[in-house]
Amino acid sequence: MAEQFLNYIGGDWVPARSGKTFESLNPANREDVVGTFPRSGAEDVEAAVAAAKRAYQAWRLTPPPARGEIILRAALLLAEHKEELARLMTREMGKVLRETRGDVQEGIDMTEYVSGMGRRPFGESVPSELKDKICFTWREPIGIVGLITPWNFPVAIPTWKIMPALMGGNTIVFKPAEDTPLCGARVVEILVEAGVPPGVLNLIHGMGEEAGAALVDHPLVRGISFTGSSEVGRHIAALCGQSLKRVGLELGGKNAIIVMDDADIELAVEGATWAAFGTTGQRCTAASRLIVHQKQLVDFTDLLRQRAETLKVGYGLDEGVEMGPLINGTQLERVHEYTAVGVKEKAKLLVGGRVLDEGAHAKGSFYAPTIFTEVTPQMRIAQEEIFGPTTAIMPVDSLDQALEYANSTAYGLSLSIYTRDVNRAFRAMRELEAGIVYINAPTIGAEIQVPFGGTKNTGNGHREAGTVALDEFTEWKTIFVDYSGRLQKAQMTEGE
Image 1 (tube, rainbow, N blue to C red):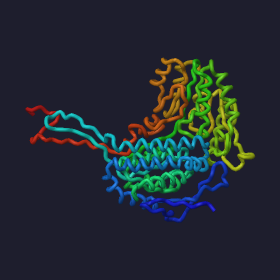
Image 2: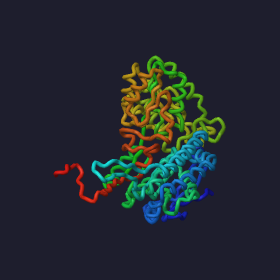
Image 3: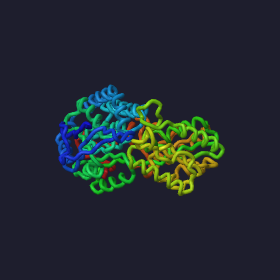
Image 4: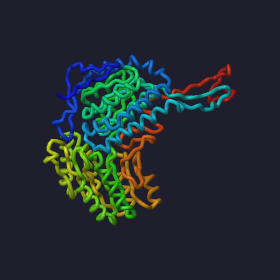
């Protein structure tokens, strides 16, 4: 019988009020039940918000350096449990062990980084235009925040949200993705062990349309941070807009790598393989478009085809496996449907395009690495996010055309160019419409000390991580102190 797990509300581990549960399954072997979790609803969210409200005043008044000490202990505990968390993640969401180790390391890095923010400036002093008067600013918490995270980075992304929210002095209701609830629970357990007080961090498991919707709708929740699909993000933004609730959205991508005629072809193929098929293409930064100069097209296509055909697909804990399964059967069907779309659009299916369901793949959600060629920007496979191991090669004959193709989608998260020409590189830095631009590197590989986020339909302008990590979870307060002993009027002359 599968192990049963609980919500964490107000310092207690409790089941859903309804008694309902759901299972988390290993996507490489659907017969392997990782655990059973509470299927929470509005009543559970209400209890979690009430606990967060009770804890808010004391946590808000906890000095930031003291908050940082707790967060630093959490970083050390994450490091201590790195291998255990990585193996759990591979079992629960499928990506290969070397990638899940990287996911946990990113969580460690983010937690360490935020812990130091407690001893860095929380504001600034600014000269006043008047005598005997000073102006300064400081940050204050939003209040109770709801954090809704995806399954593809089930340790890293929760730390991007939880740690800055804690450092900002907020109390939290956290709902991890229903496909990776145990990873989310382990992060919470580590924070509890590190000393986060009861009620400051609350964990609610469940479905997005039930627990997630109740969290977004709750009137006492003053901020929502969501990472997921653009479709759901738009819905959340509309709901939050009606109540003027703070909302940070990190949504989809349709990222591209440009390979110019002077590019290092082997380096570009290596980068494209990693960007297109790493995490089975299930990254918001995955390169699902490869914009290749005609002079490199034949060699690039042939080398990438060879690499895709030899990728070892299987269970991520098995030796030598390079690509794991898709997260579930629904996503497997979606990816395969896009293969049919590409064929119907007259793109050429070069390799892959099939479900892997025999032998070692029989019990999982496996899909072959897939490459389309002869793709044009108007095709759906060049415009819509597939979120699977599918990429499209698009030929161009100039830098201008390459930049036009790269910018031709509704998304703007991550774009890349391979070139040895510094002038081309700097022009691409300026012209590419994305929150992240890479030169001679693939579209994936974010680092936590710089802001992460995108433009256009990729989100609503917020950035996570880096020096701006606290912006999403704090309000600015401006303070004036007049010690002149008389009424002074800004922007007015003495005679007025």
